[in-house]
Length: 276
Image (cartoon, rainbow, N blue to C red; front, side):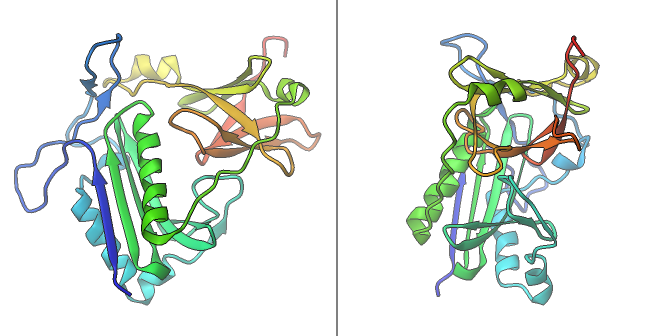
């Protein structure tokens, strides 16, 4: 079978083989209607975290994909499941450095990441000798939506593999009242709310984190719809915005009370209300 490579990039990116490289820049949304988007700032060298230590091009990532598709037994073993996941868009299981997911009956192997205004995804389909890379630089969430659309288009048009999101249940006001609230981790707050017709989710960086940061942080993600999925009733899916299709699940204590929410592989603990 002929090996297929596909790459799609949006925005500047460094080119391999040159000593002097331009730093890639993300794009932040315009502050006012009719104003052009501005480059996202706040990057420092050396980069401050492992999330941005490696700077690569689409060509770099496709060479990395070629290694893993045609690699030896060790590369293949990295694509074997080590821990199963549930209710997660990241995958059905975790390999070594890879998220493993079955799409339309076909195993995919992938990993993605982001930093301020920049988003990247690398996806392999080992049994079809196929790889696709997509990168974008439109924040706060347009780049996420763009990359997911490109990945799905590539799978369908090159391989005939079609990904379908599960259909959420009809809005249940009683369940919504049980779930709405603030969920937090060290850096972020998830606000799950209802407008009496649907549930919504909003992702915010904590104000104290923004205040303490020495560099500009990404804008908060805009409000999006949220729907519960069939089954236990504790899994959900984002139904709009850049996080569309992202799945998560609720965590309960021994008494059945909701104490946490997971989204994109991150756990948010439920914050007590003023009444509590």
